[in-house]
Length: 219
Image (tube, rainbow, N blue to C red):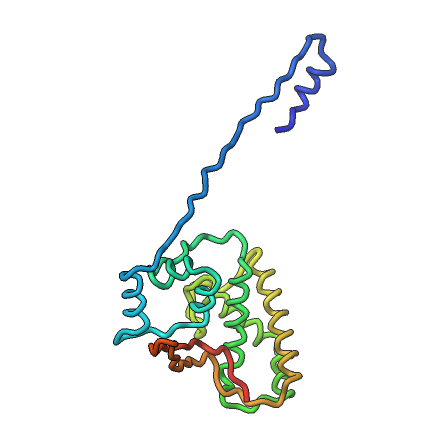
């Protein structure tokens, strides 16, 4: 810590002889322990039960990417079923902003599924500030507070503090996406949050189900 003003007065304005000493503390961090997991019969049986059993699950693109980037993380999350501990966010994480933005776009497009989307359609939404604001607000409730739904039944009816600024930022991002989509018109909105899966056969002849959720399908 920095010396106080009183200490400086003692050093330069007092008749006493003042000596100083530096106290240093050597902090030694705990050694990082290496974690190793080895494939064994139990691990393979768990994988077979999860992805090859009667109630087999669909292997998502995220699971495949996790396996390719870090096999240990794949084991902990998809074999052992361990999840990351949820923490209270003092500031909004980029991933949360992404979720709110994603939900906002879904709410804006949802009523127009299987509809021909034109440039005039986008202009009408872009000019409707109230509609965009309400979509972002409902997405905020659903993804950030987790206590509401798009019907508007929520305990939260107003945002405060930094959340107001985050809402403004997300509304600008929504408009940017709408402007981009407007340049791609005309197109038919065929689906939102569509679940898809398909069989995949390994080199050893095992059949896996590969699939996930497609955010939006245009034609």
